[in-house]
Length: 282
Ligand code: NAP
Image: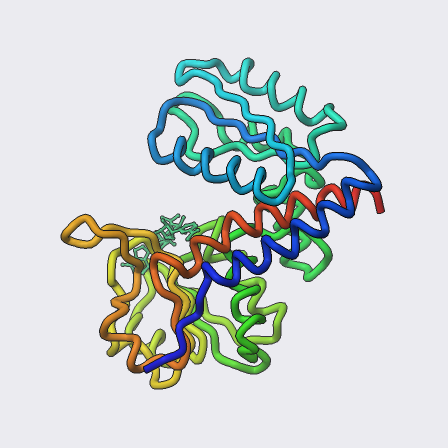
């Protein structure tokens, strides 16, 4: 049986530490503000936004919540972002994705300057990550790195395989692992011999959005398995991209779903917002 990487417990610990740091910051510099922008009525997005606002309250970050209707124009959305960019009270801006059809996501996100891009999505922050320079790192892969660090999992010289190449998870994850001296392979839907490639990994990070896709035969004995997926199984129950039941006896460390990577993502958003405020005052 492998060691369970407890994302929920680690997230609670980090949020406790962050709360103390934020209290010190506030005493010296005033409030830290995160603007959360929700456009449209997507039910999942509404839940995510609610959770983010609640998490802000828990650690002492002031959240400014903005809602625009589904049929808002690109100009309306851009006007709001420009206001938030100009506001001294706002240290971080988060636009909940996906946007309703008809809005130009790229154009809108481009308005957010790197220092307020607490999602770590903009080209400058991604470029800095690629060059292993100080930056704001996308929350989910950043959270995975924190988990590996917490459990003293060494990466130097290890073979890491990242399954998935999205801009928000797979690619930044691969860059972080390279920066930590792992030897990294990125796999995707066109990868040949996927099973064999995965089975060579010392560290396997899976982010493809396919329920229980990774089975025991794709995992090396003793590998560290990080499951980023948030899927539904055949009974509608939340599960990951990894078939936890079959893989858990083969892996040395494994993250559960729920209770693994998920709780770390919002925690790193809070952390990035704190970082953005601290850098402004550095
Ligand atoms: P995405 O943008 O849909 O990207 C999926 C990636 O997986 C793509 O690169 C795709 O390859 C690859 N892929 C899909 N099917 C594959 C297959 N059969 N074999 C090999 N590769 C395959 O997804 P994402 O945004 O990265 O999210 C991935 C998962 O993580 C989802 O379940 C999502 O809900 C979850 N997630 C969780 C958190 C969290 O906080 N826990 C945060 C973000 C995402 P191509 O590029 O070739 O199409």
